[in-house]
Amino acid sequence: MRPIYAATFDLASGHLEDVIDVASEWVAGGKAPRDFLSDPAPGRREMDLPASGQTLRVEVVEDEGDRLWHAEWRYPHRTESELHHIVRLSAGEIAGRTNLAISINVSGTQGALLPHASEPPRPAIVPSLLRRLPVCDAGERLTPSPRMLSSGQIDSLVRFLVDPARTRPVVYVAHTLWEAPPSSRPFDPDDLALATGGLAHVWFSMHPQPSMELARYMERLHCRDGARIYWPHLRLTDHPSRHNAYSQRFLDTAREPLPDFLARWLASLSAAAFSEPEEHRALRRRVLDSRLTTQASPEWLDEYERTLSRLEELDREVVYQRQVLAEVQRRTPGALAFLSAVGEAPPATVIEAVQRAEGRCPHLVFLPEALESARRSAYRRPSDVLDELLVLQELAAHWSEPNGIGQSLTTAGAQRGIDMRGRTTRLGGTIGRQYERTWNGKRIRLEEHVRVGTGSAQYCARIYFYRHDPGEFAGRRFIIGHVGAHLDDSTT
Image (cartoon, rainbow, N blue to C red; front, top):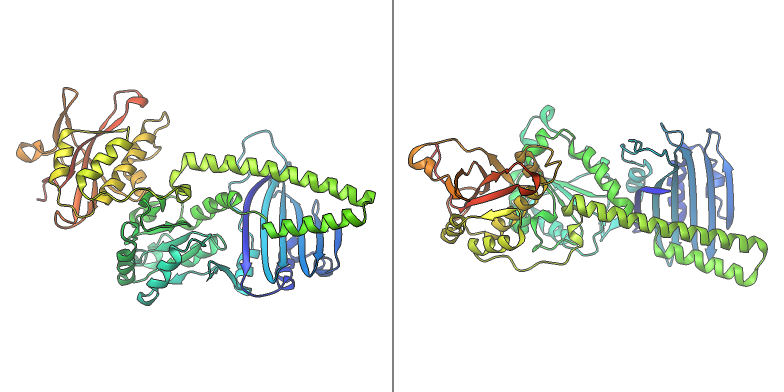
């Protein structure tokens, strides 16, 4: 059995019966007998549902006023006969707190790699639960609707973003989405909030002012354009690549709308992030220990054996989830970078930023002209330069793999939040020679560049480079020839 979706929800108020009432409207399409689901009597009961191949099991345990309700709904996969879905709901009212855990698992195997899990689970119980009951994350209510940011809410939003108790990412959509007419917008924030309901908080701004004010607070983690994911455990000193940013240009041209992409991505991450709360497991152990102490009958010994089997199954799930985390970390390092320790202080100068990048970026080659231009640079935000160079290292590393980046360099850069422009105008004379360098005994031309900021030299920098392709993947490198002021072109 393999988990494909998981979520836990803490209620600010409400009782176990309220959660069961919401769950009964969803389980088995709302066709399971209500009294079977809501019967408060401790014990275990099971039934076959009218729909073919569907079963439902409910268990209620109770100890010293604490109560736990567990339901397991098993039904065939919609398109693959060898597979089953197993939905587990565990709702508890323990020590005066009510919470719910949901997991969706796939059981069975086909013996072949097929796209049976291409559609992300979107359990309808989640938006219903969030609308009817006060579910909170670090004191902020989870809703299946987006929140519009105003200037007066920026302080509270920033406090929430840096709250270490936050467990869900915040997806912020800047005002640039609204600059296009409704028919041309790539998505609507309402669709985004519904698609990621229960797994993310969605905020948006319809006007430039809140986005600009939020950017001043967030500094390097700003979102003046497009959208950004602010992962849990955020600190304002985080490297910007830890919190995925998507330019408006990328959102407008992406093959897959952001709501669909995030729904699938967050669902896959959730399976390794959430599990049944520890207080639920502790209550089960208390009840089982009490039963074994007072009634060591064959029936209870059999239940004990089943519990041990379940623990072994959970151990296997833990191993699987660790493998998932390792694979996500390998393929998309930014997705789980918030789990890493806080890095060093930001560089004070552009040359310091370049020198740090030299030691961290084996796929970037820095020419002497790049170091000299960095020393002369008056750019006031050297940390931005370091961030862009680290993203270039990531792109260059992917480019040096046998399957390459799989898309244009400009598109790959936009997905990682950098503004990359390819192949500057071929100019001759004095201007053209600004783009020429000598490396390994031959002349090269800096035909690619990254834009960092806009305006005067204090607020605008450029990174110009050459893509070196010797004909073998492992030898591919980006040759950095200039870091600093904008070189002249046909417009200057």
